[in-house]
Image (cartoon, rainbow over all chains, first blue to last red; front, side, top):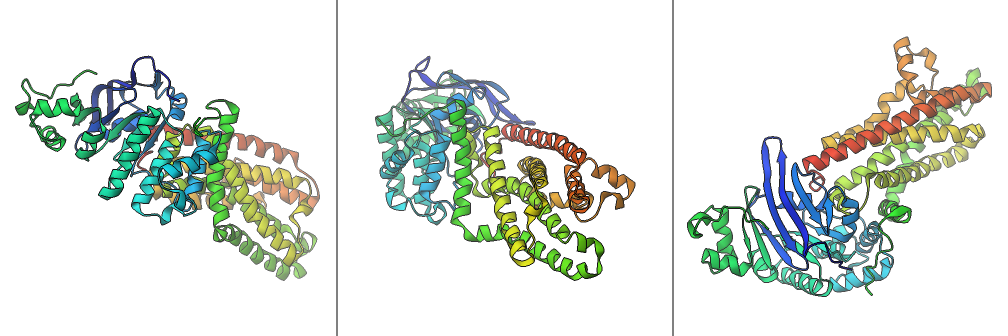
Length: 262
Length: 276
């Protein structure tokens, strides 16, 4: 279902800014997410990750700048783009009194799926939820709920999937299963993924590109390998700490706290 | 081919599917919970029973009640239509708050008018269940049928439910703007207008300034109309048309307030965070 966007980037962000009164949460950031890749949006708490994702989803109006998703301007044309996007976050829930199957049926209608029953069976199988379909969402464990949220997020086979800490609060086993599923899903569908995460192992494993945010600015970007080489570090956890603690200038010749244009 | 094939993204059919999604979401909730259905009927039934027995007690010594024995029961049932109409809209929205589901709904291609259409339809269903149960009880216990009002009942019904929708939309907007702290408004809003709606007494008994306020709300015209039907046997078209015109204004104002609150929530970034 993926169609070729005007450029080879599924998401293009230019000079994007968001202020809440005097507080600038996002300060004129620019980046692009290549079609069919997984890009991580990294940064400490308050760096602007969730604010950026919210603007990409059209639920937060930018103060300035431009967003293009799948060739369409957001949020102006959000109702053209949203059917081809989806999202999951541990901070957004599903109705607890509805069963898993009922929740998925509601979203199948919202996304206008033609063969909803077959698709629900398909994603339930993929996310290991078949035995849980008749259970109420509220009776599920945290790991099971995360799988349901993921099933909801891939229900419409989105071209662009935004994942806000998709494995937060999951045990290592379930977290690994989720990552495996997402990798397989992307390989099969060619979907573009933008992932906000605090799990650096996840980023190294899944992401083709990384965008580092600090205090609402893009302070660096590149592939995990490029960043490891640039910072002279063994793993992304150390790179993350360098950026989050403002040590990037010391470690990168010429300083890294310069926004890199996409 | 994957079963994720989309029937349509745009147009009336897609829009109807998204409205159906909202109906499904709340329909499942009602069907799965018998206690919820009982609670919808409980309040109108208990209130109606109290007024029914009061009528039985007063009727032998009161000419007015002897001539119009269904007066209080009819009034309480119609009043509850207004209350259920409003509550149905507000509670549908509050449910999304409790479920922390607003983010999921509005990152889907759901538009606000589609969401509102779903809210209004669910409200109608809830009002019919709640007041329908009480009507049945009124018939069984007091041998009073609300349908004895005749065709005017349809006019009263429509005007009261639509007025309830207007208030419910405005309350949804306030809750969206002020958060769950404003939940109490959803329960209390209708009762603020109860004294000036003239549910159980004519508007002329109110002080002049209150009569002025009453003339600006549709419910007072409906209940004046109800009294005209029950006491004089006439249908007051003037009250009917004024109620209709006022309802257009109230529903438009409610929808505008809700739309403003939604725009404001998008500016403040609260849609993804809202919840209990």
